[in-house]
Image (cartoon, rainbow, N blue to C red; front, top):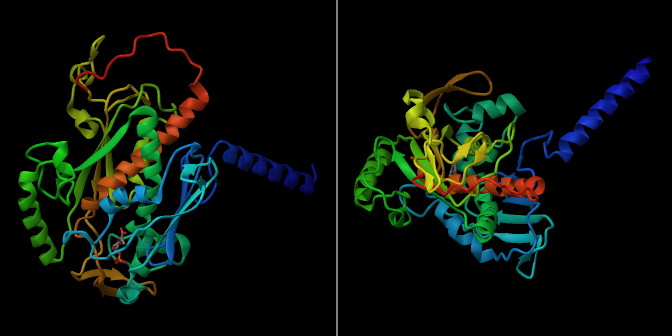
Length: 394
Ligand code: EPS
């Protein structure tokens, strides 16, 4: 074979791989797109003119109005309590395409939010320094350049568009399947809930399920803010009414994709599904969720077996690290190789976990709508003859 023929052969293999990857929904570059049949591409930086997303594959016929984005975007927003970043963004969504007379058309939906309250000068002093514990260093090692203003692309500002896209996903899941995706703050630093009531989660700025503890949380956060330090948190996600059968073994397992999506949220360092790491010390007789015709007797699995939903409640839990942007001096190096001290200015969240509940809900909803459409594509004609077990205790 001549050199030319070998080159041609290699080239056609690469082209074929690329075509296969694209048609199967695997994108070769650069991982700013999420999902196979309901795919979301986000773009934008924290201090750029705007952030946005393009949603491709949204089912046609869904009513959606710009006002419907407000509720979840406000739940995620900064500047609404003294316990989060003081930056005040309007977060007004402009729908640029894919919606005609208030109804999705099945064509790509482009959403845009303009950044209106960036203060880039706060970042001048650290433009060439790596905040310890921040993505500054790894972005530089990967790209050889970064937008230092407000964390650029690595800023939690980007999650705004995930929440916006998930407003559409949540609405479709609720209308089509009666699915609700809810979350709450399950630990703030050392503090854990002493009671649980879903009705209380939305009545305080922490998404805390026990209103009686809110003064304790406020006192803790006031102390933390004054000290200049930050703390980690845990957020739990609960999804009701997912039918059995969603999830694609072996590389598109429902729990696998949920874990990946949740881990893809800024500052997340751990994900558990169901009992998660507590399973390590459990015995099989305890962990297995026994089955009766009237329902499952427990839910240690978190609603997923073999990567496929069981019809039980889906439960996931994430650990978020403490914010790395601190006004307390720390030691680091700069891009020129000098050992320097670093102090971060700007308006930062002393606990990013406080605003993470709607973001985690959003990622779960995006995984679920994608899996729902994939299940419909492959298995819509399958007739299941075995009994469907109610969720029971789980
Ligand atoms: C963030 C740093 C802060 C936060 C920002 C997330 O940005 P800035 O210093 O520009 O105010 O305010 O959060 C948002 C703007 C948002 O909408 O979530 C970070 O480093 O992740």
